[in-house]
Image (tube, rainbow, N blue to C red; front, top):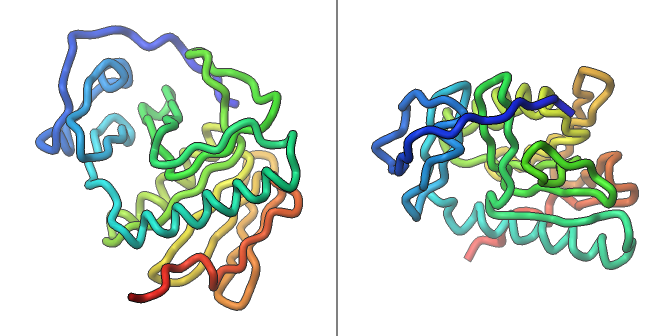
Amino acid sequence: MTETEPLATISHHRLSPADHGRALTLGEFLDAEEQDGFRYELARGVVEVTEVPNDPHADVEWFLLKSLTAYDQGRPGLIHRVSGGGSVRLWLPGMVSGRNPDIAVVLQGAPKDDRDRRIPALAMEIVSEGRDARQRDYVTKREEYLAYGLLEYWIIDRFDRRATVLTRHGDLWLEHVFHDGQTASGLVLPGFAVPVAEIWPTPE
């Protein structure tokens, strides 16, 4: 995992959608409050504000969380915690970034960071609509999550109906792409497999 340095405390700031594109230090971002109803991330020193995901996004997240819960029940003792809804934030001081993955998996015995929080081994992002969102999940976070030290990164794309599973190989990602009719799997959770066609919400 990446080594981190203590984050400085600065004057208090309240983030809102108006702060999208604003330059902040990691310490300023860490100290800030956040207006409810939006999601905030720091991307290479710049605030990114996005709306809370819509129902199709949330339905995919719920399916994945249920799948991970079922896996944990069948193989107790491997997973320490699964968090969803952006309740985990990954700090990258060297990149001046703070990221909230849609889903994060912490394994039993995981080390803690300098804020006394256990470090995830696996993260999943569900691609939102728009070019910026695709760039963020496929390119920017791919680089950042490798630098952070994640062992595995899943990119779930409901628009292209595919799951891209990136597994760490030294300081590189090995990429495996799964489509409808295939079953997505990785290495961090042995035996965890998701039929890709079942991930997507059923049209109403």
